[in-house]
Image 1 (cartoon, rainbow, N blue to C red):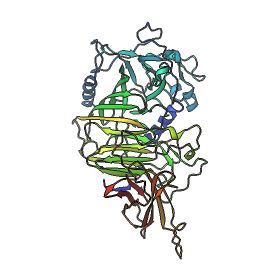
Image 2 (image 1 turned 120 degrees about the horizontal axis):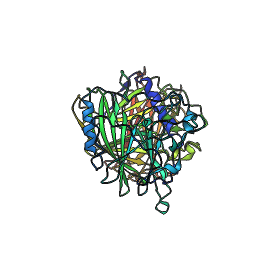
Image 3 (image 1 turned 30 degrees about the horizontal axis):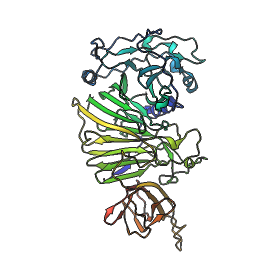
Image 4 (image 1 turned 180 degrees about the vertical axis):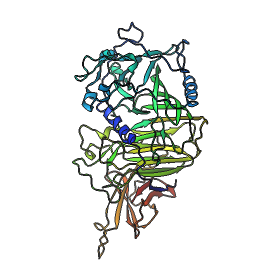
Length: 555
């Protein structure tokens, strides 16, 4: 893997930050929510369940069978032949003006929770405030035509601001969440594990985890000077549930492309989500990000982070939903600790030929590393992306946006193919997302020892010079894993590189407290320092065999 890095300026549109903030506002406090299953899909429905007329060319609802991915793809392809038409701005003024507190006060009534099938149930989200877009929902069971699920104000406790308000069925919903009975002994005690809310964002968690990073259906021109585009999932067909797996179909619409998605989701430890998609570009797209992940990183174990960054003044030692990017190719695995505090957004590219998988992970799993009783960063999942059909030549791109606000997602990772995306040329995707907790995990191979921490400080502390050289930096990189030798006298080979400057006097020692190995390496920066990042890499070998991931840091 090789990596060109450089500042690309502030490439965000105004909608970028607000959309990232929107995800955090809309999903605050939802993890582990109990959702009783009391609403019977087949019973006489006492609440109005009408639905706005389908748009021309929409998948037929009258054929007596479920809508399929092919049906949604046909609709997406038809839409792509016409100019983009966003949904009407039909949100009433009082809903547009909802504050954060007003939005949080709106609650779906538990007694209206919709059972989807054995072990699964659903609740929709109300539109308003930072969730203005409408999505249309259909529910379907195996062998049956989909049932439209229309809006009714009686489904919600609207809170004091909207008390006694009513709205038409055409209002629709902002999104939805699905819950599952993780414990077979308490199958009716449902906990939500999957949320679709805002643009093409969705969140997934495994058993015992809480929500953290988000995934997206697609990323369009992330980091481009023209600004990023956010297509929307506009229609969902939810179900059927079969064998512990729920299927969700989605129609994607945006100015630059349309798409049809099928999500087959199996909750558990870990939870797995299989994605099959067909995309139909309306125009050539310079940078199409496949399987994008979005997360938050404010401060971690690398100190201030980027060169010249101000220290993070907080009682908590670390604040992040993910602490690194992992990229795997045959025989190698690269770990890049995330960084914050640069003067401008940064784009890094990691060539992968071929790509076996990538993900944003939360490797630090100790409460003592965060000390945040409510946020529980130590329980937030990582997501591992594994291509099922091959993404082809390209690179995993990492976008790091300076941020001091933990309510704002400032990290994006996605695979960007080399092949140019042309108008009218269909693009088919097949990949899976797996939740990751404490490692090692079966989803991530080969069995290389992983980077568990990378710390940096003045080299003068342990290796003083006369006169002092304050620019010298000492890196301490810890590796843990089954491939490491137990013998503290084992002959360990160290491979180090720097895109500028030089490493000197590396030393590796076994850490008896953890059973891992630590690499010490002094970095002497060049004079003058370059404007962009200096890329540093390190890994360990033993008996002629690579035994660790490649640590990839920046100076």
